[in-house]
Image (tube, rainbow, N blue to C red; front, side):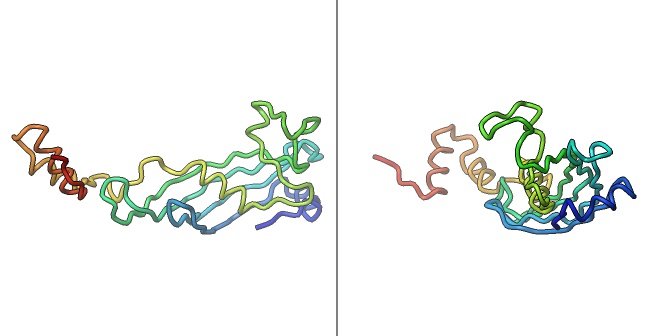
Length: 173
């Protein structure tokens, strides 16, 4: 979804805010990412819009990836809150490409003519992907369980030997 600033000026003046609903999917190196639902509002920061715009809302997301523990396919559900100031000039007012203050780092700089909301939401999802991706809360690493079971009671040498066998590593003699 692309918002053309000149096309929405009158609507924003009349309504104060525009409702935005988006659903999209894209591929990432971790797997397939889907924004199953985004409901939010697009509004001016001030009455004349000179200080930019603001996008706020909630996303429901799903990541189809591999489980970090067992390596089986996993569907990871997560939510992302969006509270994003938007500057349509493409760069900070009075700033340069190389100078960005801490407060400017929280602002999304779009082109002067339009805003690609899909791209903004894609970036927000990527910044908020879960760190631990599991197929279930009770997921067990079956390879590790097997190693522990085979080497139980025989000390760490046996456990290391079992691990090397499972990983296909040859022992040096």
